[in-house]
Length: 389
Image 1 (cartoon, rainbow, N blue to C red):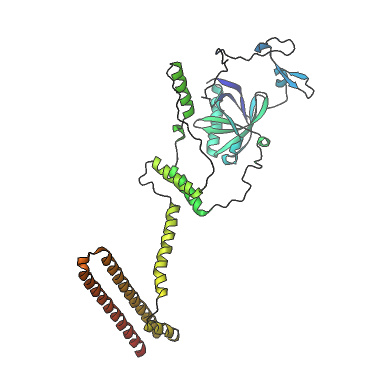
Image 2: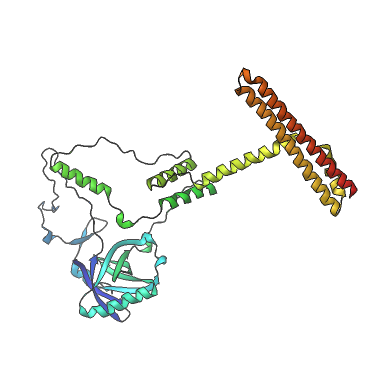
């Protein structure tokens, strides 16, 4: 790789000759401006404003324009004579933990290569020191006519340098965050967590530029004269979110489906909501009918006398209460079963089977009466034991 800058790393009293190499490259496709009428290329020519003649690059220099429009010529020799220690040196200022560097400051990236055999030893020393300390070096250097801030870190077996913006070049995000107060519910956070977990991780090396590939394919097709524009229109994503919970649930399902997971069921938040609703329904089904019925006399008596009992009597009263309540529940269940069976049989049986249905209902009713009688006997026995105690 071709170096773009030669200099040295100043590490205390140690000087390490290095070459600066670009660590990144652009793969974007560049277009030329053309004349639509005849396809001729449009070129920019550098013309002097005073004489109107085109000027070659060798005769073009630098100048600073003042407020009144006058130009002060600045030469490379003028810049080279400035009293700046970083003119040809990457001067390390300090070593800090990597997490102290704000990613917003990150700029261009470079590789630092040892320049010559004598630079191998100090280069390796600095590299291993950075590895062992798990820190990065903050340095100042000059490049392309200005002093810059940099961060040195180890990438594989190479020292890399990231150009950093100066702290005053980072803008304060005023007026960027939503001004209205927004409350995020735990259920929404749970669904967001579920979506994040479903999407999982991705190998960055597997990502590529789809747009660039499409442009390259279009150029290849047009050069062969067989290009046919697609009529498909891709609608841009976005728009107003009406139901955030529904959007999150659909996103989780879509992510699971794209990853080939069987079922693609709803998220944990949806299941939790359904479970809560079912629990409330079951509670109402158990409690509401019992509150609407009268308690048996023996149960009411046991309940009324329970606070006066002490020791073993209290436990006996509680037992009587539970027994009476259980008997009442069995009686209610038996009567409910009898009614449900009678209605179901009346709807589904034919006229010829009416007598058989009536017999079934009578036998079921008799069973219900026996159950009720058993419950009353149990209640009386409990009450008798209570008196004996």
